[in-house]
Length: 388
Image (cartoon, rainbow, N blue to C red; front, side, top):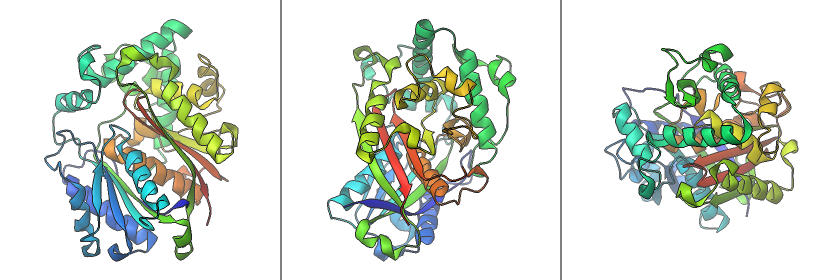
């Protein structure tokens, strides 16, 4: 049985001091159900993507979803966590329930409240998503991990600091068109490529503009089985989906090969019966600019070490052959951990239904979405197309 996205909601991402995790969950759920024109009584189950890990005191958050609608009371609800891919993990768990025939309509919410703790505490909590046996090596949590990945990539293929700056500048320019983006500011290549007081080196060679934003935010989706899709005014089919997990310890793999993401892309495209060149656009997990560069190569758009050509030749820019992160990506949109994967799918659904506003890619018919947990540990790739 197939699954389609039949409704969605996206809240603004950013520092939302007046909103709790519960507020974000409840608002996103209500807006998605309203968009799909369903009531709580119509929903067979709720899946919440949320990392937490100490970011919020609401660790047992699954039943907070029920506060959005009295009709959800007594419905099964579960919190799903898979690091930065928690949102996609929640979506895929809901798809599993529908494909198994245990649900016909599902509510998927991704939410995170990150700014209630200090920046140092955020770094520590996210660092705990890495392998504890390698804790502190490299130092600096995930910025340090991805800096090491960038260093290894540069050692193999030359210094591509300017390439990373071009990716950052592209995504910040794209973020100008996203009304929900945390940072709607076109920073330009020169600013992103220059170390300065406003753009300090975080972990060499990664500058501040090479790192995604710490954000609060939420997004939500309503899913329906094929036999229920006719009841909804629009539908975006999940044509294929693939999850690949790799070893957690960095020492057990060659991380610059992005083998997990590469396998996930290959599997999802094969299942969808299409090639990467058939895609109209893609939303990919640019937690750091080096991750987007490696994603180009993992998608099969370029050979190893040749990803820089795609940004230099304009292939992945908004007007290029395959726009990547027209939303601004995590770089400009923000990265509220549990919300990210849901956000990517919601924005892809908007693009495919021609409702993405200023972000709209003209004539979009087929989308690729890549959400990643850890440093290429949990890789989720979806291929989406409009079906109604």
